Length: 53
Image 1 (tube, helix red, strand yellow):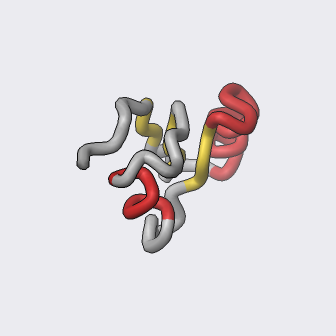
Image 2 (spheres, rainbow, N blue to C red):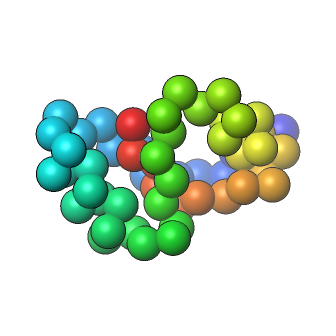
């Protein structure tokens, strides 16, 4: 399966990353390698509105 659509952010500072996470609240997830998040997104077990890398 393919993951549901989401917004992707690649901030260059910690402040930018925190701002994106705060903007989307619980609908945003930090990517942080994606070892466990990406597979759950592929099976649509997790459907974040935004990823912050």
